Structure formats: C-alpha cells, structure tokens
Image (cartoon, rainbow, N blue to C red):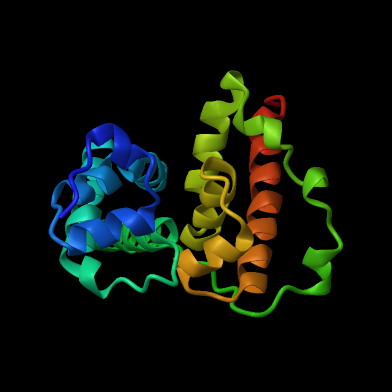
Amino acid sequence: MLYYSTYSMENLTDAQLITLYIEGNHKAFDGLINRHSQAVYRFTFKLLNNSDEAHDVTQETFIKAWKNIKKFDHDKNFKTWIFSIARNAAYDKLRKKKSVSFSSLDEEENEFDANIPDDQLLPHEIFEQNEKIELVRKALEAIPFDQKTAVLLHHGEEMTFEEISEVVDKPMNTVKSQYRRALISLKKLIEDQNAPKA
C-alpha cells in the first residue's frame, strides 16, 4: 500500500480517495470528511435552522457514508451522494419534530415555469447582501422542503440542476420547476416583509 501524506491526499479526487480507503488506507476517508463536512454542515444548518441538529445530521451523514462506502457506485458523483444522505437525514430529523411541508409538485416543468427568466424572480445578489440575510432565512423557512433544498443546493453549493436531481432522486425538469416556484415564493415573501407597515 502506498503512503500518502495529508497534503498529497488533498490533491486526490474523491474517487481516488474512496479507492485508497477500500484498499486499506483508513486516512483516505478522513480526507473525504475534511473535504466535504463543512459544506454538508452548512447545507443541513440552513435546512434545519439549528446548529446542534445540523452537527448531529452531519455526523450521521458521514457515519452512513462510511458504512456504505464499499457499495458506492464509482460512476456516480461522491458529492451528490453525500448530499443525498444529508438531505434524507435532515428530512428524517424534521419529520420526527413536526410535519414537513413537501412540495406536491411532481409534474414535468410546465410552460408557466419555463417562460420566466430566473433573473426576473430573485436576483442572485440577494443571497450575498448582509442586510437581506435574515429576510431570506425567514422566507426559506416558509417554503416546502424540496423547494428549499433546490435553492440551497443551487445557490449555496453551486450545484447544477442535473446534480440536484441526483441528490433528490427526481427528474431534472421537476427540480427546475421546484426551483423556479421557490424563487417566485421567496420573491413574494421578501417583498411582503419589506412592504411598509400600514
């Protein structure tokens, strides 16, 4: 077995780290944790809006990944696989606490959605303006879980719609439609919060 320093492991792909781990280099899985744990925590924190629960879900996510790593399909993307585990664990956590609002939208992307440019719904900059962060957070809490997931993965993790469809295990057009509907809802919620009080 070849020896790899922490530095050299940082230069390996996820697939190479998985292969190393399966071949017996246990530090290789640490490399996967170091590479992805911060992003998984960030995602689950925004889904759950609770730091302790996000830490628990992040830990649970990597334990599940570790237990199932030998079954991992090397044709798949490790990042979308780990985020799929995290998304499911976060949903289970929410389901135990309360009923979760899931989007009932399972149909293909429709004409109404397709004809609305994203830049007319919610500017990307709104996620980067400090004074709007709290407004966005409150608005995100009010939309269905699947729509929230699509927005967080697309904006927060810069995933493509194809990658998000792998995470949530739904057709890409469904993801696009959920994303656009989420932006419509967020735009309205934020505008309502910004409206002058009567």
